[in-house]
Image (cartoon, rainbow, N blue to C red; front, side, top):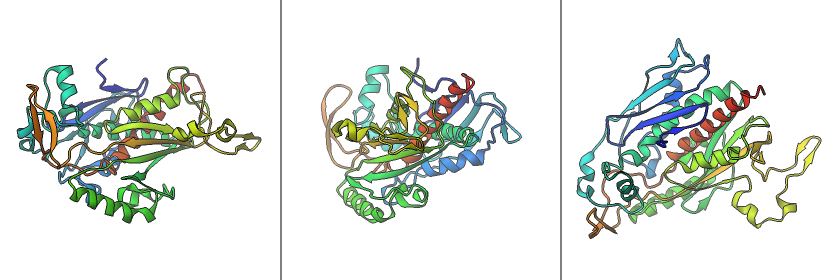
Length: 352
């Protein structure tokens, strides 16, 4: 297992590095007859591409124009592998030449060197968030498959820099800075980003993903529970350090009488379970949150070592976001879409 392929029946394999010629992927297992075009994929990629995020954004500019290479004919999928590629256009590898022998704190430099004995120091190579282009493209394909089954996924930022959103207006999130779930908190978030940027530091946050129309029964016990697969998918995104579902971490501090969701002839009275019971979808709204760490590339001097084990002090240059939010929001949405598409196909195998 190389770790570059995700899914069981609906399988995405990604390739490419931050400063290589291109990033891309192959999506295998998509049924035939699903409406698909470059424009459909591009709409999702445009929400992730560099330069998004206003005051929190990197200066790197990439068009992220996708090209479909295979698997689509006359606007529909053919059932064969769907190949796609996005060329890198605005690399500035010279930004990293001064740290080619140094391990950046918080990055995967040291661990990639330990695993392979070689690393691409230009923007982190394969460990770069640039790789997530492939996930968003794959998620866009999954979204079209799920749309045909009336399953819809939304994502929004619910906390940034320790400041939580109060409202949960997912419908308007795409039109707001940071893809915020709450219009009222945006100004406070912008002030927080400016403050931290002036200090040469970075921020983390929390993204919530919700899925409507998920039919009861999705999930593969016992080791491929729906919640286990969602956690695996979201934790596979580099900046994510925690995942919770429904009441999540707060459930550890509740009583059973508080955490249980009463069932009536008309349905559930609450959704502390986040739409999953025993690892299988209950038919309620799916509610998942991902906890995103601060970007490790900071403009402050840090202590580290070089590849010879010598102590060094460094300041990371290059062009970096102040926060992975909002660009990580479509990535996390894509991972949930990929899981649900895979689980839907697994369920259809049972004739359900």
